[in-house]
Amino acid sequence: MENKLNFSALEQYAAEYSGLLADRLFEQKPTLTGRDILEKIPVKQIGLFTLFQLFEKWKSETEQLKSPYFDYESNEVQTKMKELMNALSKSISISREHLLPLFTKATEDTLLLILSPLEYYENLVESFGGKAPTMDDVKDLQKFIKINGHMRDALLEAWASNGNEGEVLDKAFEDLNEPPEDVNTLLEPFNQLLSTEGIPFWEGGDEPISIAETVIEEDEEADFETVHKQFTSGGTTMLGDTLGFETTKTSLKSMLTINQKFMFVNDLFKGNQEDFVKVIDFLDTCETKDVVIKFLSSNYIKRGEWKLESPQVKEFMSLIDKKFN
Image (spheres, rainbow, N blue to C red):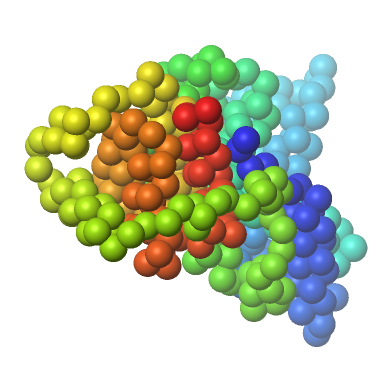
């Protein structure tokens, strides 16, 4: 079963973090400017999402300007409205009371974008109510979303050519080779105010995996080392043909969700898409679960590259169980 994001833990952390952030920024002044928001927040994406909320509030307010006497849609009026928006953006002045909720929402969105970019973009697509973004929307999203920008651009490109909400995400991310940015690196700036270590951002996958129960003899380790070298050598011979294995009917490749693919590449294979694909292809040639476990134990667990207690390893092994059971 795929691990799920623990939204309760995320929201609790965001509330505490935003409170500490407000304490720091409002310590010596009663209001903050746009420059303060953009430059003084340790996590730049939080500042951008805060300004994005202000921008969206401005758009919402201007959309309410309708009159039987005046044409607010005329080119001249729209031009002046943009000039007014530019002027207002340089004159932002917000008190703690009004800014704290924006900080909290911006922190929640930033954490979601880091921890589960697919869920963030699902929410983004849904927020448009089935409509494709306009060119102005695209420019705004490119301006305010900086983390995992390659995913943002892939989504916007797919969105422009396919307005079907249910198909946009699959089309955007199915063939995306570049994994999301490293989660730990992105979380590091948060630690300046409030440590993220030990926060249960993920729930599920608590059952221990019994890889260590499989005994591996020295000669078996040598055999698996040979296999490991063979699948990373870049040769064109299929491992299944070399070892005499037959591919099982249910392949790991077909079982992977987009979210799992990104998570495994980023967290288990250090962002190396090619190594991930080679390992998955090899595991799909293995006839038995025992062979798979021995291979993973020899090449990843025993070498300390994978930790049995990590949610990502548990998630990966749950797929192995599902494949052979």
